[in-house]
Amino acid sequence: MLILKRKLGESIIIDDQIEVQVVSVEGETVKLGISAPQHIQILRKELVESILQENKKAGSQMLDQAALLQLLHNVNKTISKEGK
Amino acid sequence: MNKQSVRVVESEAYGKFEVDEEQIYHFPKGIIGFDDLHEYAMIQVEEGPFHVLHALDAQLSFILLPASLAADNYGFHIGQNVIDLLEIAKPDQVMTFVIVNVVDNQLYVNLKAPIIINTINHKAAQHIIDDASYPLRHPLSFKEGS
Image (tube, rainbow over all chains, first blue to last red; front, side, top):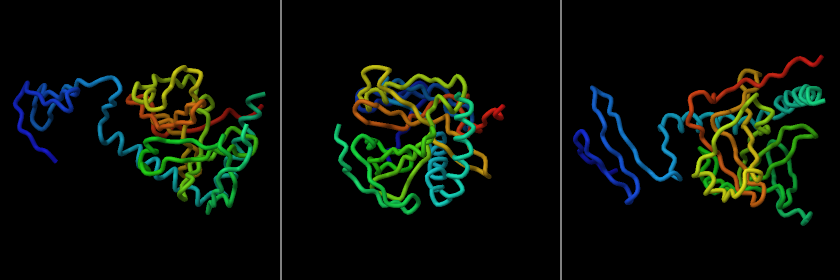
């Protein structure tokens, strides 16, 4: 990992196209301004982490498939009733 | 149409089944948490709206539901990163599914990170919606049949 010291208002440039600027520093909170091309998605890491955990949980349920399929079967019936 | 079965999946949960090319989807970036798995088969469960998305090369599967059935007024802006990744040219090439999760016998759907599919080239991705109003667990409930 590269570690850089930056002062308020200073920036770093990543790969000629992404700029990260220190906008403000208040106690333990640092506000960053990020300029990047539209095709680059910028996310808080804890958001990605929460989705990863939810995926792991959803993906591990195949072992309970008998119960799950029964549940789905019941929901199927409800949905098809609704659709009519 | 090539109806020949092209792959055999031996699933611990669903048994051994064959899938043809039309059922196979390629995830260039995998699914979040499973970045190394790129090939999945999508199989409809009975005649209903649910689908099983099963990895071709691993004991991993997800239950999917078309997003239109998951919640009222569910809509979002697909990011340019996904449009580029899936080579989406027109909106009508896109299908959106949500992942079903079961917690304490209650069905939930993940509205925060739907699965986006390009129906033309069969490329797919999980898209994160960076908006706090889209829940990770939205309870799936249906009005009681009258």
